[in-house]
Image (cartoon, rainbow, N blue to C red; front, side, top):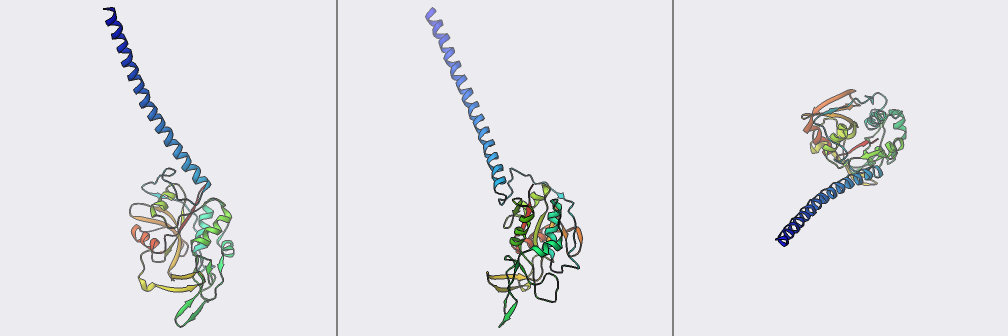
Amino acid sequence: MLYGRVRCVYSYKKIGAVVLFLFFAVLGVNLYATQDKKIQIVQVAEGEKKEPEQKLEAVQMRKKEQALLDVPLIEQLPELPRGCEVTGLAMLLQHAGVSTDKMELAKRIKRDPTVYEEQNGVIYFGHPNTGFVGDMYSFDNPGLGVYHAPIKELAEQYLPGRIIDMTGGEFSEIETSISNGKPVWIITNSRYKTLPAEEFETWQTPSGEVDITYREHSVVVTGYDADYVFFNDPLTGAKNKKVAKQDFIDAWVQMGRQAITYVQ
């Protein structure tokens, strides 16, 4: 009889130990999973600090359903008839707290020195992603504008290590940036919708062929909601101008998804 009781107690202890082991095993897995998740988030955050060129990560930022920022409005006219890009950059930099203006940026932007020529119907000129092409100050001479690479290079001189080149990304990344208080400089066209093929022509440049449109334009995106995109337009002097969202996105995509912003 005593033997049976001892055996029974021993069995209960054995069962209890097994249950206790399983409980801590499961708890240990959960703790490990939680710890592993935290490590991954920290790694992403550190990567962003070390590599500001990377895309904005969802783990860092959240996109709101709508947002609208108060960004300084600067007009390009009358001084810079072709200076929408540097004027837009002046707005972006002033929003970041940098003391600069469109005329200073116009002097400092990198230029492509290629001279305009037309031979047998073929146009030879500069490449806007190499530097500003042509005359920024007057329509009396040939000219066009500048794309994101020289703008980003100039912006880095004022905010070293803080400029993000978002070119090639999705429009949702622009919305995420605005959600988190940072406006976005972009390249679009002056109609803010898809242009027909006849609005483009091909140039031969030292960097290769490039398809350009004289309707190329640059604005600073300041907000969005479900139906519209809002932006500061340096050409018309309109603050938080709104355009149908899908039309605006289509124009931006057609112009190469060019965009830059800044981080703290």
